[in-house]
Image (cartoon, rainbow, N blue to C red; front, side, top):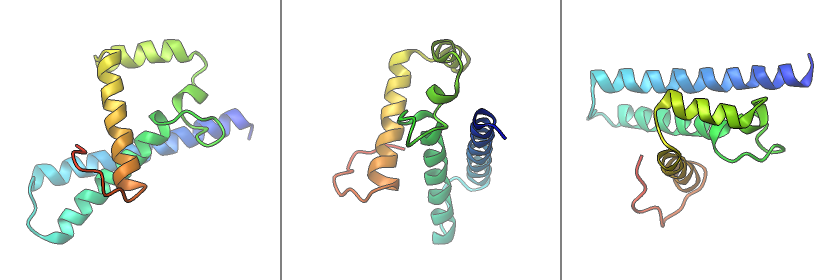
Length: 123
């Protein structure tokens, strides 16, 4: 299989994992928005963390060597992809930047590293 096909397959796998994780988290939340059992709270947290990790693979840092499935490294026309992304999600660049910053901060300070200065991190 050529490199481009392999990268696209990897993107599909990451997308599928992210969508499954988000859907499972939403389904659990619809059944029990504030679980009292610690086990369910841990599962909710793990699902949130995994969704953020998968999202960051696609939309976080765009270093081609370390993150070959990032959209900028996959899209044949990154500027058009960006325009389409904003159009389909109905957000502006400033809103996207704010969301991106929050997702990356959560990943960096809560999921990927233990940062005691994480006070104020919103999910």
